[in-house]
Image 1 (cartoon, rainbow, N blue to C red):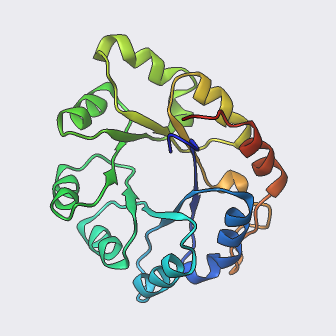
Image 2: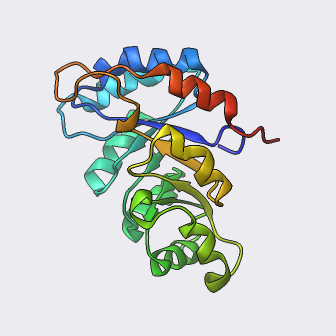
Length: 206
């Protein structure tokens, strides 16, 4: 994420139906993609097939809120995981499995708690609720260094550059990228032009 500070989050009850979207992301040059955990009986198998079928992408798992979800993600073989919550039990289990789990934080207390638990990366969620500049305002009261911050939740492609300029390290996008009708059985395609323009405008980092 230091090289491309963008993540795309995909969500569907049947992950196997996300193949067209993953193909779009691969062809556009997106590197980091998250697939939300789901309770489906064959979720693990479908995700294993996606991981094997898209070696060019660094696939992670999103929405990890329980030990059952974490165990499914570990079995599926994801490269990393992201949670909307800060749960010390999930972090301990992930550490025992040598698995990178990014916790969700919002308040100064949660940010400091994550830091004390050794989290080098956190997810600011929901970012749209706290607003642009929130992360920067935490710097002086909490003291540097703050963890690497991924802003997520309610953000659009047009928000990415302003949020990066305001001090976060990366931005995650989800539903705002969908171009098709929501609620259908098939996963909606992406509006590729905004995403292509965004990728071209992202800052180049060593």
